[in-house]
Image (tube, rainbow, N blue to C red; front, side, top):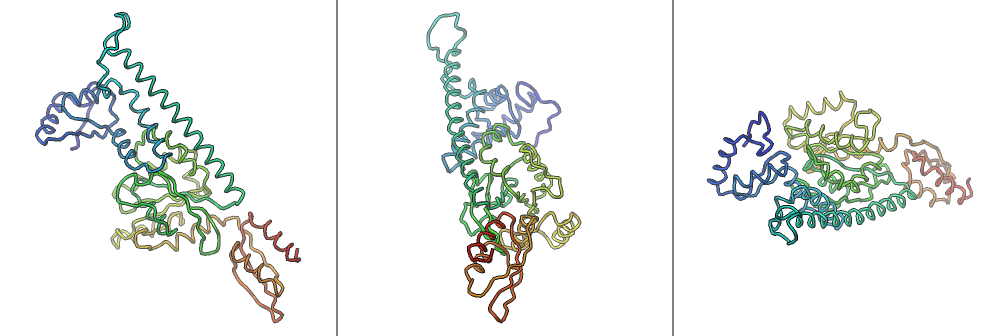
Length: 387
């Protein structure tokens, strides 16, 4: 039900008449849970639960419940628990039913339950501190992993997008992995990485990340900072959009807002973001034509694909290769006969554009190579006695 809200009421959000009307609806339907798509204050949540005699979840509470079901790794569970505790800390008087019990003491200590609330709040603070300490180890470990990857400088490509846009399906399609991909929100909470070789021979690491959502609570953004750091450190960001969704533009703005908070420029033509317009198989013929015209008009800053059918994936990989290879160098390398190992190295670490074999067996190879591999090529030539 959509409820017009001219003025939010501090005590119950809705006016008294609407609260009573919704209470009747809850009672008649036998519902035991009411979900309000709004950031309720603790007082509003408590008062609505009393009025409706059922559990009430607001937007943040619902997202946290879903996150709690989806987290699969220890890191994911820690992040969810941190967000949950931060959220619950301000709601102690509502959720902790034992707080009305007095713990004894003297009258000057205050009203019923005051000492118990302070104790529980201290316990929550201690648990939050412990989780943050554990997550700091995760951040440090990720930093060490990134440092290790930088010694073998493979470019990082991170997949981001609105929840349920098809990120994990695309990840599986491109890498052949079996990451869980179902038609439900926040299916992926824990980042997954796979090494991938592009058709031109370039190696890269593809990372699947948590989905975004409109009005994502700041507590969740903070809790998943360690995960989102993989996005910040990426060489290229694939923004996967469900182009068939009626609110695809609004979803785009929501994702770009979160990326902006992370300090990523989504507007620059030469920026690190490439849009992937997914679920092309759900478009009608006129919608598909319009999408392709828009892509051309915007200077090919997007690629139309269907992760479900595989349509457009080759074009996407070629676009990734072009973006990652913007600073590649094109060289000609002379390889005398009998140096097949050097030719094999070129095929593994560069894109061989053309080969010409002379009568003597010598090969002239025209290659495109990443500047990061230029020094390695010099070393290979030197070891072969050609440097």
